[in-house]
Length: 461
Image (cartoon, rainbow, N blue to C red; front, side, top):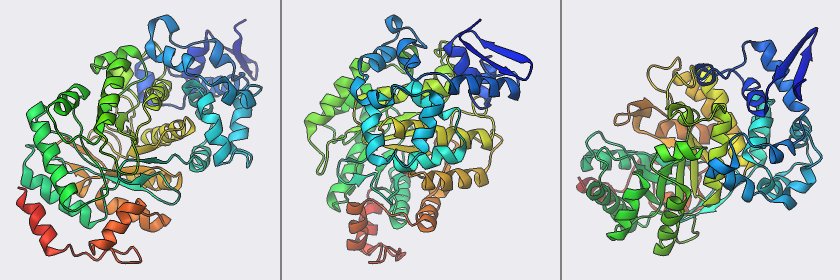
């Protein structure tokens, strides 16, 4: 009999290996069904979850889902494992691990100490047997603080990425969105543009424009143009004012290769950004984005379920001590996360797993227009992530990204969740908002931007 088995009533379920057990235990989502990995029905899923709960955590150290010899992400996970940090957990099963995570003994300090000993597969496994409230409760206890020109991830704070994308990279359009976001107190995580024209000269133009605004008005934030890492490296070689290096990453070597990257390239970019010394209060210089389904869409998942592949991407991120990481949770489409319910579950899983592994996790609470989701679903996920201690969310004009053609969260949405849950901006950015009379001493927005600042920003166009 397979060592991975469970009996429900008179029926026995056998799972051929750890990879299949993990896939069958995963809460339902369209991507795993598309890949032929999902449980056939709810009973098989529960049987797999029961078998998974009884599995010792040490199993994940002894059996690799993707072979060590053929995958550099697996090698990174295995070679970077901290045995001393894992030792207090080594006697636990996956179910026991869940119980410990939910206990008062697992406070912020204990979770931070354990993080280097937790592998992505362990995090993924325990998430599969947790309810939404479990994912929220544990993630809320994980506090991950990073810094560059301000300090992100502090208790009772939620930052925002000001995302002033424009379908033609028009400077006046970008400036108008930038102004709008600042008036709503958005932009402390990063002012980040997805360029419509992804070439080095245009990237340098956008970087120079953002740097001029930040430098002229001494805004305690950082800029980023979300181009391929090779473009950013070339821009740095040409003297561009690069704050953060961006790259989309995935959880297998083959999926990362489809993005045109490997660990060596990321290490080169990390070193290059550090050498610029542009941070004032910290030196976290990387910004990574992830999303469930990326490995499957590249046919690079090796038969591993999409949520476990996603958690493995966090090992890549953790290696480079990023300022920001976020899951673009609904962006990849309904082929992978079909509706609002699946997007909500995935967003909370991603946030939980990343925080458990010690990452400064945010989320792009989003969906594509052909998904069975709407803005009410996003309001729900945004609120749950705020309760879970999410580091940052997106700020997009009107919540409609007219360049990338998807629906996200607006400046007003970010303001809503801060107000309802008593959250605030990064402390340095909050002080700047008061200094500029954008916000009062009580944090309330004045709704009026100083005329000189407004005119100067708009003149950039």
